[in-house]
Length: 338
Image (cartoon, rainbow, N blue to C red; front, side, top):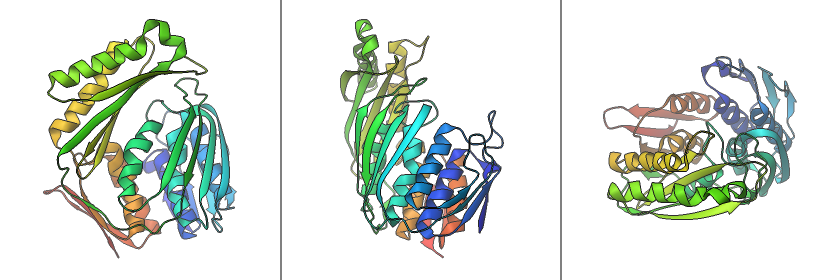
């Protein structure tokens, strides 16, 4: 049984370990889950992600409970089909999807996931629009196939989202992303709950974002929209398409934070990405790693090497016969079969 020390990071270790356990058929045990966090152990989105993966591969699992700090996971065949998840809090829908997307590669048939509750836009996690417009196109370069339909948006702090998605088993091909290439488009959406429509929150966010982008010398096309939600909330999501890559940035509305601040914040993040020449953003740098490893090899140039990236590398190498190497002078991460 592969043993993983969860004290080295947060919920990402758990999601990556269980997903790769399902794909490889290798049993695993994750200990000290989120040990260094103010609220250690599994929270709602971690538990539901683990339950969904267990359901997907009919795993024998122990320790699946709120605040549990240790999980034992013995996977069986991934048959595919319909998986349903309910998140009772504003936990991130994207993080629940993360493990399922990886595990679906080893399924006998397509995996359909329906998520009720949780947040499409919450704190400390990329929004669902990021997965749709950045992550899926990136791993699509390796041959990955998946679709996401947001039926209801859900905002932090109450959630209430509803999404349906499908992911399909594939043999991935290696990819090399060393240069970003020409910027092709900067697009996005400024959105808010209909509860905030009288305050013209979506329009104000959009204008603030567009004004800052234009003053910085970048054209962007942003749509504004309102959604029926269980609580007030807003966000702006931008995605950047280049010749060789995709990048994203977002900003979440919060109490005491003006619509203008939300728009300007995401514009500043996007301008920084554009001016830095980054090939991938910091979310993609660690999330793309399991797919590279399952493809057998790959190379990409990183901009800022995060702890999440280092942690994900150490987990992946325990499950798959691959070796990652870092060229810190050229800022290139490479993956090769070991």
